[in-house]
Length: 116
Image 1: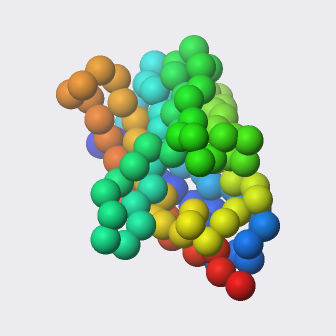
Image 2: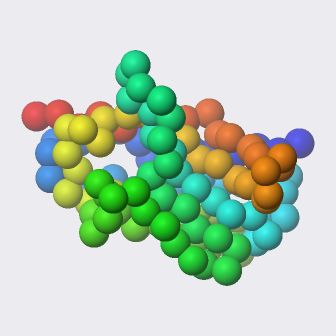
Image 3: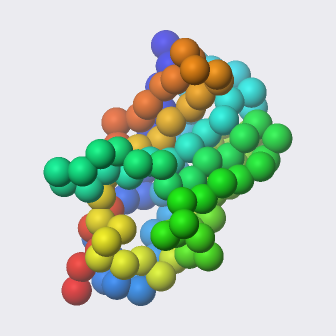
């Protein structure tokens, strides 16, 4: 049974930082591309950042220079370090594991709220 469990969300003031974690089980973690998506109320789920099995990274333009995605294959965990947070970063953040088009798994999501 595949499980992706996100943690680390919460409420923070603008300019603050949060570190999200996603612990995976039931998959050969090191083979999967891992990604973080976010979904704000009334909007579609959007890709924030991804990291391939080889460590290559990709970021959505609005988070470049502020967010960093990383992975620890020994711990089956992917991280999203979020710095200089803005109110527009407020969303539910989801972790995704993927190989190809058909093998995709999602976590349950963690809420991030940026507000003064």
